[in-house]
Length: 159
Length: 142
Image (cartoon, rainbow over all chains, first blue to last red):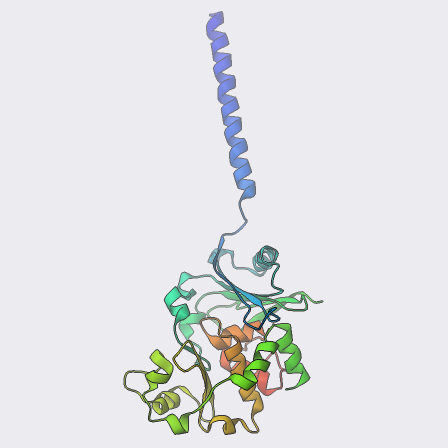
C-alpha cells in the first residue's frame, strides 16, 4: 500500500512536471509569435547611378494578412521592415493584402507602360505604400476604404 | 527644373538618375514611326498586327505621352518627338521620372506613392502624378 502511494506520487510529479514543461514551451512559442502575419515577397536594391552609387534605393513588397490591415498594424509593420533594412537610406515598401495583387515573376519582368487607366480590379483589396527618404523622413499612404480608391497619408517621422 | 522638383526627386533618390536621363533618354516620334509594326517597338503592349500609331492612339489621350519599359525600344513615345515637349517640360520630366523608376505593377501608382502623393477618390494614379509635375512639384494632395 505504502509502495503504491509512493509510486502514485512519483508518477503524478512526473506528469505535472511534463505538463508544466509543455506549457512553458508553448508559452515561449506564443511570446515569440508576431501579433500579425506577413511575408516579404520581394526585396531588391537598385543602385544603378554610378560608383559609388549615390541614388541607391531598396524596393520591398510585403503580403500582409488582410485581417490585420489597420493603421496601427501598418505602423508596427513599417517599423519592423525599416529596422530590418537600414541600408540604403531610401526604402520603398509596397504592401498588398491579397495574392491576386502580387505580380508573378513573369509579370514583373514583362513590358510596362505609364499613363494607363487604373484597373478597378487592382483596387479591390487594401494596399499601403511606405517610404523612408534620403533625409530620414518616413511616411506611408494606404487606402482605408477599399475598394474605394482615395488614399490617406500618415507621417511617421519628419526630420 | 524647379527647386521643388529637385528637392522632391533628391529626397527619394531619383535626382541623379533623372539628370543623367535628360541626356540619354530615347524620345520616339510616333508621327514618323506610326506605320511600323507596334510589337517591334513595344512588344506585347501592342495587339497583334497593330501599328505603332494605332497602339499609341488607342492608349493615349490627345497631347499625351507614354513611357515604356522592358520592351525592345525603351523610352518615351509622343507625337512630334522631342519638339512636342517645348513649352511642356514638366510632362517630359514626368516621363523621364518613369524611366528612372520603372518599378511596380502600375508605374504611376508606384511613382506616386514613392513621391508621397495622395490620390483623390475621383483621380487615377496617372492624374495624381500629372497634377504633381504640372504644378512644378508643389501639389502632393488633390
